[in-house]
Image 1 (cartoon, rainbow, N blue to C red):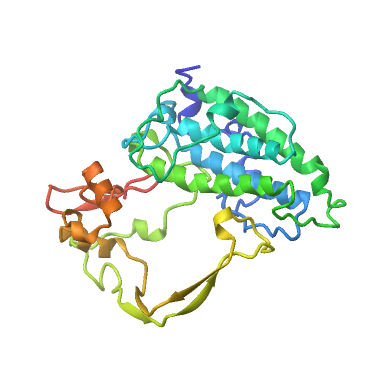
Image 2: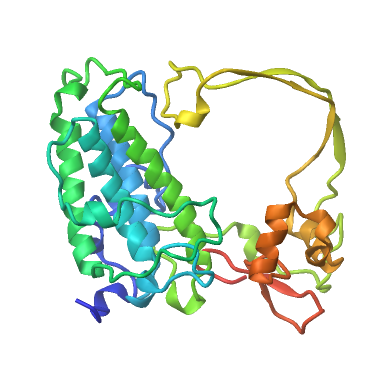
Length: 346
């Protein structure tokens, strides 16, 4: 019930994981860090390969959620109020497996019809100012945890026993395409990985005292431990590389993913379109924090001419003056910032 906080505080034990624990999960490295498996080849699917990818996806997601410290961050909406609290996402990814496998005819009944109603639909990411989504009493963490256990067992049973994945004990891999009932399974995999990324953003928006780095989560890049330069004003060529604009010759290109491409794809990836691209300029590197700092320090967040209409409306709505994940560490106007990662401030 509510207030069941002890099991959610501190490092999670193996009981937290409703599928495979990270140290025995496909994708774990020699240091005990769980990493993503390569994208599966849908032209040659076996029961074993499908289960391995499912286990990897499922446990990666639960490893992320082992980073919530206590019950509060499961129910605390993000500061902007534009997404559900994390308890929704904890139940949403297993819900989608069930509902899509039912639509595909792989499953013939719900696991928990009520949960598969309340956890089915998230928010419209295009409606950033839609504030009407958090007015309900959510189930307890323990209730959703038990639901996840039931869904895990249900999906594993489908992988290992549904006739559409009969691979003759691994000797005859199966081709899974959009006409195959298990296309819904691979939709579930990719959907879960989308939420691994988007939920990690919500973690970065959670107060630092309400998160903790899970034991099996990858460490920060070694550069995070390096001493910063004495100056708090990053210098081009010293603290970050110069980023020259390069000329790119235009040409005619073909867009669209072939229907027989052996990986899962969302509907907007398919079809064919021919586009004539004119000559253009592109930066040599991705924009660095140091380069963007120059934009912030030069007042870029106050100058509408540098923003598209939607971006400027969002900036005004949030009254934001620097990137959300930069944490001020000096007086206003000094432009001294730290960086908030998923579980740490550096």
